[in-house]
Amino acid sequence: MTTISPQRAEISSLPRGTGTRATRIIGIATIVMIAWLALFGLVLSPADRDQGDSVRIMYVHVPSVWLAYLAFIVTAVCSAIHLFGKRHSLGVDRIAGASAEIGVVFMAVTLATGMLWGRITWGVYWQWDARLTTTALLFVSYIGYLAVRGLDGTQQQRARRSAVIGLLVVLEIPLVHWSVRLWRSLHQEATVLGTDLDVSLDGLMLFSLFVGVIAFTLLFLWLVLHRSRTLTMIDLVGDRELDRAVIARRAEGGIDHA
Amino acid sequence: MAEVSRLAIARAMFVKDVRVEIRSRVVAHQILPFAALVMVLFAFALDATNVLTRVAPGLIWLAVLFSMIIIVQRTFAVEATDGALEALQAAGVDPVPVYWGKWAALVTQLLVLELLLIVTAIVLYGIEVRAGGIVLLVTTAISATCGLAAVGTIYGGLAAGVSGRETLLPLLVLPVASPVLIGATRAVEAALGTGGTAIAEGWPWLGLLSVFAVAFGVGGSFAFGPLIED
Image (cartoon, rainbow over the protein chains, first blue to last red):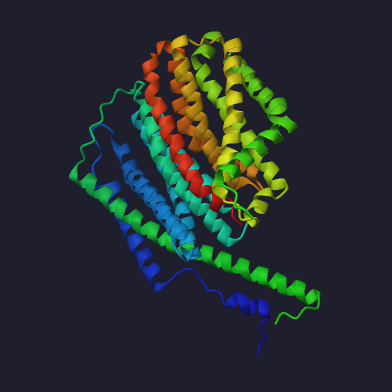
């Protein structure tokens, strides 16, 4: 019979992975929906009369921005639950953190795909439009939120600080949007190619966008479940290492750790 | 022991911060020269008097923002070095008046800084302050400063005593402060008549600056305690 060392025993008592039956079902559904999105977005839906094939960028761009905003809403709600709830639960804090990480990644995808589309359609990567500028500032603000999560301190300190910052960013969004909109209303809009874009969408295009939104919502759910469980495991490992270090120091000093 | 009123705590914090500054002269000897230097560097970068006159309001507020970051770092570094904020918490002092005391001290320092920067812009960039725009200029400076100080004090409290705060503070403060940069710049342009702007065009911006100051003032009152708590 092989003897397992206490350290190995502790590690083996941790969950073996972040997947469950539910996440596997959501994962398979996500893959199916994304394959469906690729089929509709790249093959079945027609090219746009004015924009040509560049309109297909929208099938990733629009679901990405939806996912990013959904993620930030979840972060804000979880921050409020952590701060004002009686239990000050670390579980909701981890969901807030996981959701913000995913939101930042998809906000980057939104900005990148938006700039590519802008370059093809408007002739420029960037316009100082109210929506674009607000989105860019929001992106930077959530990078700041993630930086706050990375600060030194206990798990409770991390949760409290980031919950406050998560709510302050929500306070920031309308003020930034208001100021940028007021600012842009005083300037002439950029008309690089002079293209008058007709945004009325063909039925199949609208359906492709709808498929994209469903696919990305499932993707968000799948990612947030896995990532929040990963964060839980990281915290557990951190706690165990701390306990082990305390026991080792006590043993060095000849103090019984009963 | 008699309980100390909130106003007394805020006043004590304000007086302490101003006294620390008067005795150490860090703002006077380091930050004001830094801000003036930034204005000179802007002139080197833009290299055209007519462009400088046009963009002077924006440059003034940019210099204020950069200098504010340094002032906030400095004011909270003083607290963190001696563990003063922890001591106040251990003594059961209410964090709300501590926030307002530090806010008032920051407002005072920023107003002095802005006065210097406007004088520098008059001398170096050749801007002219018209009599009719003085009221707008002063009210803009006061409301923008109240908002900036509210944001600076919140995030300064968060970064106090945490390693890596030097790099974290600008990342947190600058995106939040961007509405103030936009609003204050446009209002000062109207006050100075930059590019033929009428004074009346400046007042809507003052509304934005006031809402910002109130929102983050109230937000800061709630946020400061949980942020500095251990």
